[in-house]
Image 1: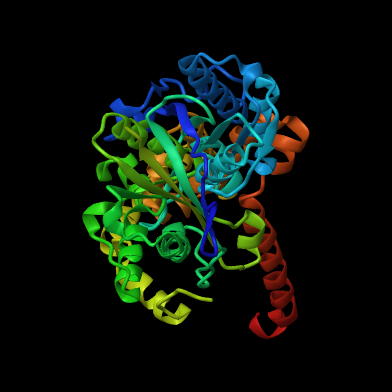
Image 2: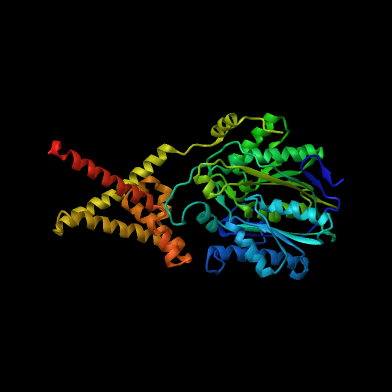
Length: 337
Length: 152
């Protein structure tokens, strides 16, 4: 049985998570998850010439850290799957250039990390790869210039806006290995668009896509929220999380609020003035690799469903008054004793 | 097959119910006092220019130049974006805000070089203000020229 329902992969040979590493920026390092990140940057430029090169360097360090922990040389890695928010995903591909690994570039906006987990685990389970590096990154300063305004412009943000996290996460998956964590199932979501045109309100744009993917995963696998210790969405923010709870309630999908956390809403304190919370590919990546996987390893959690979500708009589509379509991917990560 | 429990209209209603609105009164107050302060500084500069006997044409130019200098300098020091976050339109509408909207892309895009970076992007934000400001002044000028016989 390698498939369930319409959208879900059940991995016959669930890949082991050999290593998982996270890097977070200075502001993220002031947040509630500070101690869970492997590296907290003091300088978000990482002594580079540009923000884009800084993001690339952040990815490179995060991946190398994971390889060090697993004691795997980089030429033994069979594939690197990753993406970021830059045009033509340059942070990931430039990092892959330095790392010299076979590279599969992905784009799922903020869902990219989970997209990489779902595809990477499928390729390993199917026997096409022995191992794979799954990664995603985002940088506040590259995303601002890409999607919004120059950094020094004096603008106000609406309460529904989120802050792109400066962060990176990396999970090294392998067919062999006695690591305690396994990726056991993955669901590929559909693009859902309920005609939200406010590109600042990504939580509202993505919540229906998360709901769709989440309920697909539950119905495909015959599970309920009770079967998981935690369902972690990323990154709906505080408002998007409330919307998701409303959607679940209206559709009759049982979702106890204490089981549902959101990576974007967990990354910052409300006092840090990030409005709706954190966003960006690096948010769900670093929170998964830093916080969730470490808690799984410690035995505090046994089964977590990570549902990454992305707002699939571009500055062009926004300027042309198009609505913001949402996407979501779900990956089930379990502890195996 | 749609799993969505709401139609787009119903969902939009829910979204506006759950989205906190901006704190308008606080915003008005902050915009009022910061914008007012900038304008008071401008007025003080104009009065000072009068004591220097710069003349009717040069005095306002003196005031504008000094305010633009301050706006640009505060942008370069990384202060103006914080003022903007606090004051909103209070610091965006005065000419210091215009200076900020030119200086910010100049800093941001210097890494793309002098021509396609700073040169091409300098007016990305101020461009619309300039284009429509100049276009509307031309229209008003033409209208004035047409009707001046009746008015005068």
